[in-house]
Image 1 (cartoon, one colour):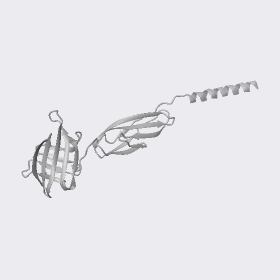
Image 2 (cartoon, rainbow, N blue to C red):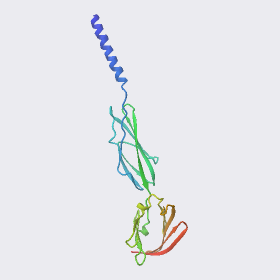
Image 3 (cartoon, rainbow, N blue to C red):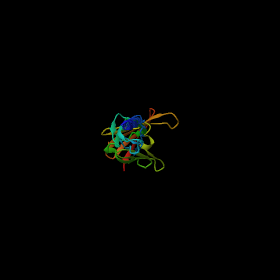
Image 4 (cartoon, rainbow, N blue to C red):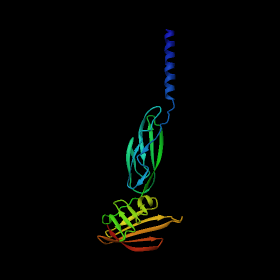
Length: 217
């Protein structure tokens, strides 16, 4: 009887040690990681975030919480977010494992301004002898100086405060350039005269050149 009692005591002590050991085993933190379909582009910019690369060494990840840096949030392993305004945003993921451990990871998303030329100006416009031409699409302007020089506006000026405004008869584009190290505010104005002619002028730091008549090709 005493031997049986001794075996029971030993068994209970063993189980107690085992249970205490399990209860005090520290939780290893999860690892947060994600990939982005794109990290820069023109607004509106759609980005797919994929956190399937996140892991937990001693358990499983239970929650994926996202904040996109523009006030919006979401949850899930894979999410899609659209940035509607130009700016630099810190997209952040926080993961939580099955024992409450957390980890986070961030990535920078850069969104530049897009253009929205009105429908009446879309197409190619040039001066009579073709020395310069402007081609307007629904989201961009391409300038061509007689084939010798071409400028894509959203690429060249997207990080320099590019913006535009439009009415039924005028279209104005503004941006900043620093050709000599000193920032220069530039305004380009396109005024509708007829269905096939517009006037173009450019103002740089208060000095205006134009108007120059352009014809639709």
